[in-house]
Image 1: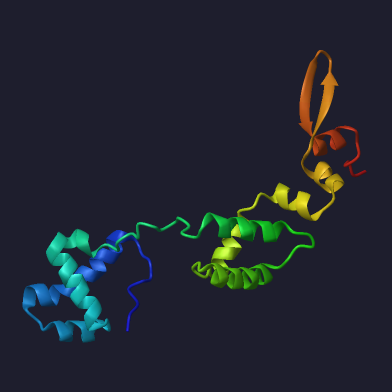
Image 2: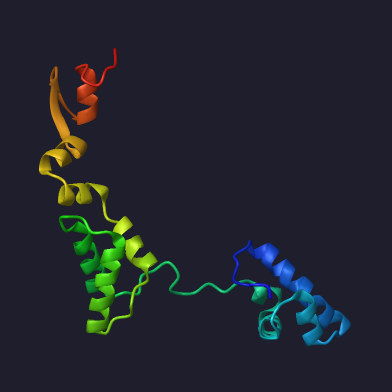
Length: 172
């Protein structure tokens, strides 16, 4: 059975679905035969027909979920995940996921998937992770700016630029 959840371009997807439905719509071929010939479930073909009758070819486009791309977890859960990711020593995402699933059950929240937890952890600013997991000296070396005066104008330059101007990073 073909999987109609595989994303494609809307135009290609609509054309493919119209090609499947054409024998039923034009030649009066039974719907079950159309479904079997296309290797698509009868339920899917019926859903396409209903959407086609309601909205025409535009109804055959994949509908967008209204919540797509937004998080539906409580703010407290996201903050807990971020807090666990910032603890020292750093925990793996799998360990954070296991702990948050237990806490979600206790709080009556929807259980987050591993991918959702991973997404939340990956969105944390790398500078924040460095500050939380490394020393402040490592953070300063990596992210702080150096205040350097040249002539009458004060400039802020990244530390690595300063190191190269003094020959520290020069090879040879």
